[in-house]
Length: 284
Length: 159
Picture 1: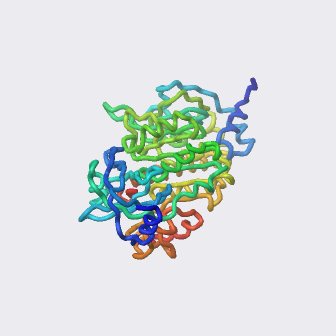
Picture 2: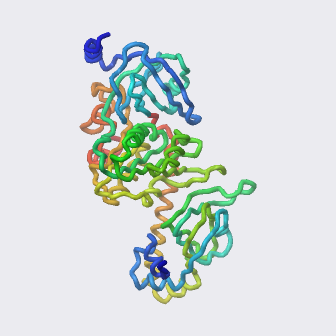
Picture 3: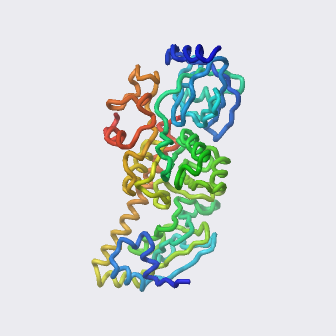
């Protein structure tokens, strides 16, 4: 199809219409998490930016919003998801050759350009490392464009750490500071035990010139954001990826509404200055 | 090479930076430097708690010994942290095990020097006790967060 026709088709396609993607590869990350590499069977969705999500659809079961865990630079997609329900369990069980539906990309991603020239603090909890991984890749691709870069990763246990080999590579590479901390230690775990906030006082950064990106359980992000503000990081420099009930992805259904905002289009990545007053409202 | 006094070393440590100079100077009289090699036991549950440790470098695993399983690590303490508050209260016995995970350099402060001074100078005792209360509050908060099992729950999300 000529490029212009393809673009026109993409523009005309309803955001609620999935395109078919074939599973090209799977990689089990933990007992509950899998990384899927997807290739379009025909038409592809538009380019996905770090922090954006797609809706992954499996026949007869449903859809889930999943953030990109790597940016391929081609029409392929890489998603890491955790088996927490019927839909994600079905998608996690896909094998190479299986077909899933994909809609998107949706939402606002991480503003990596805003971090240029700044120190960067990335804090990930659990599966939250997946949406932040493309940010690490982007920073490493242009390492000199950023100041001191620190990644703090929290997980339930060592066995629940995502991208373990890649984390080790980043740590050994030395161009970014990597700290991992687990809730519960096993005998073969030689790292730290505790919570991510306990690691923050040891992370070096220049607060007014620091951009922070947080992704993980909302309670964790709230605690980390408040600690960063206490250190002097401006609220507008702290971004977090919110998790809400995304359904349509196009601010049509209202399931993901958060006050006056729709997380599917105004997020999932939002600034703490926007999120803080809303997250204070319980059950919002 | 510049030799540092104990007062200098306390002034560099996060825990002691909150105290006025005169109190820090007095605390320095009760302090000495100690080093623990990796795997060395720093304190053992049930034994006399004779003071506390301020970690200058290295990591310390704090936990409880489980029969036939060894130390069950509850949390890792590191530079800037303090270990031990059992010396403040009767029955003055450690309630934890602490083992050096790396080579640990620490400052040991001795209860038999501190407690009589605090009896005579309640304001100094109040300052140190509230500083420990803050450490306890942080530890309780950390424990509460982990009791929630945030990363393992369904509301930890799937994307």
